[in-house]
Length: 406
Image (cartoon, rainbow, N blue to C red; front, side):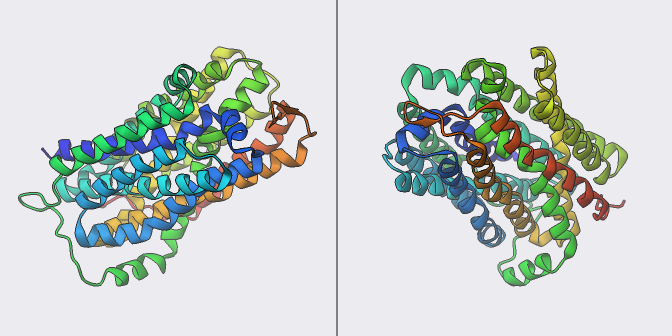
């Protein structure tokens, strides 16, 4: 029963990941529908992350105080309605508002699932809960890749999003009827007092910021490449269709799903959080630099490279375990919420920056009212990704080991 309840939270996390990555499959359609350039589209997509990041600390405090069931149910309901609102939006402002509401609802997915794990499962299982959550999330991201591209080509992007909205309402009902806030013999008893004191304890802890910044910098590839610009970059550089390019992004998310249990196991086997984090940061920096800077890779090597960066990315996921271990256990929801807020800064900062970098090098070419960016434009803008990963390496050196002692 404990794992079924955790799985319900993971199902919602996977659903919101479909919403998060869906713009990658319809970049040109969105620019045409809303009459925007790359910078403005980056702002629309960043609205998701503004709302997502802003909600994390209030949600963490609320989770510790009230439990996750009601919040997860409401979050899934908001996601479903805002998904429908985005599908009927006709201009920049309506799209940005709907996308922000989508981010507000999605903000509960990861945090709520991990909170269910801390309530229903012993501390030694938190790494496995994170692994389960990442598998469900990346399954959602995989479905939001090539399969969603096929759905868009068949039904159109607006009707496809409306179907996703209905799915969100169904998940809200499932969570309401299946999830419970307290285990029969609670492993963690929630406390309603001193919520903001717990937050202060987390905020004044320098390691909370180091861990959060590491997670943010490592998350940049999934945010920038996986959520918005990856399909356009690959299709432009390799002269293939967006449907074919989407398969490489799907391969990256499959790598995340496969690698998540492995990195969790490696961390537990070696009794360390920092080693998998360092392995992930160094290797993804090198591979992304090669993907962006090399003129051409054979398709099998390109696919392997995207699978590898997804697989090795999972060192990032351990930052949530570290955040809960470096802070008081009764504040686990708040600690994870604070960390997730910092992590989601990757989208808040990254999407407008990459969009602006694209427009800075753009030569003004238009097709059907949509800006056309060259391979060199994408390569220039996406150097932002390995630059962030390089900074993540330095964050690991500043981090203390948090793996629980016997």
